[in-house]
Image (cartoon, rainbow, N blue to C red; front, side):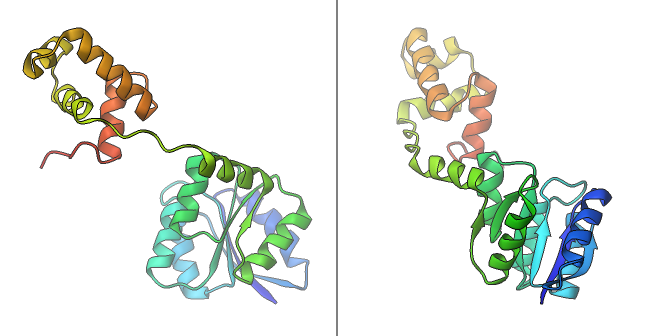
Length: 209
């Protein structure tokens, strides 16, 4: 028998999953949680075979809970069950330690097989999610920023205008604009503010002390 912890902030979803798995003699629902903090506490206390984890919940989200469970050495396999299938959600959850990732629209039979596979330690991905991951892996890595592009970006991050940056770097204002366009393309953004934010998040720029 596979023991389950159901984590979702919607009572109707929890009731539905409890009813589905509770009626199957192969499973035992040992607990429920309405957010990530409750999930960590219940997971540590109950140590179920599989934790069905929603991602977006008030308070502590699913990814944070997955990381915390791993940090505390809880051996439960975490199977994400959510409505979100964007690249960022999938990769972040898997990197945090999730064994699998399924969408709530998955048929009952697929969900049951996924829980059984997760309990055995096998990776589980819905077809839609697997397709996204394959596409992400095949996508060429973005070109790194050149030294000059970094210099322009650093000045822009400090509040310099294009004209001021050009004067500091002894280049034309047009050249500064060209470098910025290259930066936008490489970072996948459309404006100066987004470029600066992306540069900080990706480590191109260091946060001030």
